[in-house]
Amino acid sequence: MPTSPSEPAGAGGAPGAADADAAPAVSAAPTPALSAAPVSTAPVDLAVVGAGPAGLAAAVTAAGLGLRVALLDAGERPGGQFYRHPAPGLGAARPGALHHGWAAFTAREAALRAHASAGRIAHLPEHHVWTVVPDGDGWLLHAVVGHGPGERAADVPARAVLIATGAHERQLPFPGWTLPGVVGAGGAQAMLKAGLVLPGRRVVVAGSGPLLLAVAGSLAAAGAEVPAVVEAAAYTGYARRAGTLLRNPRKLAEGAGYGGALLRHRVRLLGRSAVTEVHGADRVEAVTVARLDRDWRPLPGTGRRIACDALAVGHGLVPQLELATGLGCATRRTADGAVALRLDAAQRTSVPGIWSAGETGGIGGADLALTEGEIAAHAIAGRPVPADLVRRRARLRAFADAMGAAHRPGAGWTGWLRDDTPVCRCEEVPAGLVREAVRDLGARDARTAKLLTRAGMGWCQGRMCGPAVAALAGEEPAADRRPLSCPVTLGRLAELRPPAPTSRVPPSAEGPGAPQPPA
Image (spheres, rainbow, N blue to C red):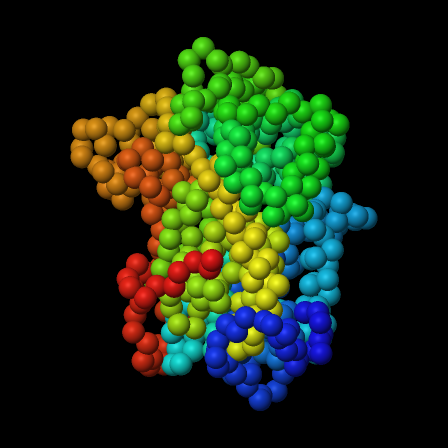
């Protein structure tokens, strides 16, 4: 019996496994194997969108269970944002040195190559899926391939779809955040992993969440001076989930490793503090760090300057849900205040035929994403889910919820915004204009504030400024709903053929019968 994702079709469930479905969700079709070249017009058994940890694990596991799989990803190489590769021309001798859990990736990348060579997986890089539509009894994925003048359209029919589109950084604005030298915390890590470059020589790392420790350690190890890690939350928040922490000893060891790295590089860790202003003429020259109260309001008289030439800042991650919410998938509020998909124990969304795994179901890290991808693959193939996967998911999800609760942004963070602080960078809308719309014009939600101020109408369409505008309007961020997940030309839209008739009833995103999150 196969025991790894790289082994060929025919793998079965482990003894004592939990049965995800009484009958197969998708039956493997007895049609010729797919090549890794252009996809044929025959539907694949499973189309996976996103080749990060969750999508990669799902694809190789499903192929090992006998399904014909198409793996579509916007990137040139698999791995997603987490396993980002150095550019080939840089000649990196040890790309794994900048990654945690690199062996888990390389094993699955090797499995992907093996399955692609055998015709079980069609790996389709640089395919940016912009919508998924019903097509008869299956689905049709519309994608754009490549960039610029050579861009072309591609359609992939599938019997089932797994959405593993990951997440993007949550940015909370503050005075000076638009100065050159201010980068996202994840962006700084991406610069280092993909380009082997540093955002500056003396870099302050700030915001909230466990990513800050990893970023600071990586920057310091690469030669940057990191004078401080500025964490808005209090690490004492983890004490309320002590049992969850103890059930995840590897996570504790990982955290201890990051702490040891900070000590070796003499990096100060400032808890319950935030960068409330960036100073500089043409680029970052210094930041002001202030202590915060329990609601993240700056405490008067606590500000102090730290000289630096770059700031890496981020306040956690936000699930990327455009494809799923465009299909009507139900959502839920997570422990960190973000919006994620509501999934059942088999990783199914509320829309029949659509599964999801990884950060789209709630931010949880690469280990959880790998586990959820494997669970989803078993469920889609109609195989029993191994019990150890179910237990591991429960343990890792509990840890993720503990992290989310500890680092959830406090409502008082808007107190560090001056009226002239840009909130929407695309449309250059300051915080004062949004406050005026709320105070004088009756705006009570982000949509009304957008209509009155143009905040969120620019190039990013509110992806970056949405949480900030919602907070200023006095509401929680809403689910990101948009008809297209990336810019598409009118010519591409005109080329679309009508989908085949379907008997599916359009789902309600919040209605009864929506799946519950796994226990």
